[in-house]
Structures are given as structure tokens and as C-alpha cells.
Image (cartoon, rainbow, N blue to C red; front, top):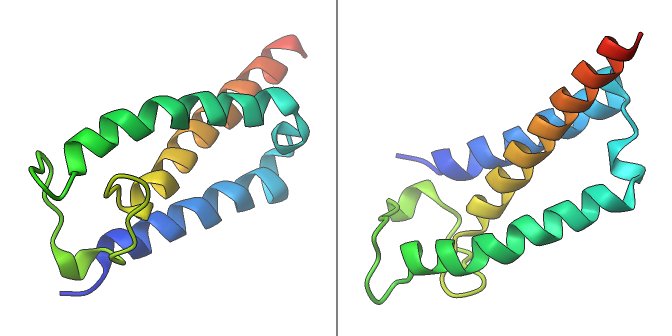
Length: 104
């Protein structure tokens, strides 16, 4: 078994960024409101994900071979933040694309 979760998380970020820069071109990454949104999401993700993945009493278990082993803060696998970025960003990109198409 290899680092599937790590690979999937990294690929999700690369594809999301490539979609914005190469196809959608919404300008989302240039907006302070987008970065504020990510900060708010991560501020809520940290306590919840920290509780779910804490090594002392985890609710969610990861196969050690499937993740990088990097955990910050409170034992949260870094892959969770990568997927969080992709999920939020892709949702906002598609929402923005739909909004601009409707306006035309």
C-alpha cells in the first residue's frame, strides 16, 4: 500500500489550481475575500478535525502508509488541509463560473 491519500490530496490541489488558471480564469485567487473565506474555513476545520484525528483518541483512523505522516496542528494530517483547500476552492470556482454565465 502506498501514500494514496497524500497523492490524491496533492493531485486535487494541482487540478483545482490548474482549472482556475488554465480554463475558468475567474480571478478568485486575486480576491482578498477568497483568502478570508479560506482562513475562516480553516479556523473551524482545526478544532473539528483536530478532535477527529487526535492521536490520543482518534475518531478517524488513517493507514500510516496512506498519509505523509506530517500532522499540524493537533495531529491533523496535512492532507486534510489540502483536500479542504480543493473542496472549498472548487466549489467557489464553479459557483463563480455559474454566476458569470447567468449574467451574460
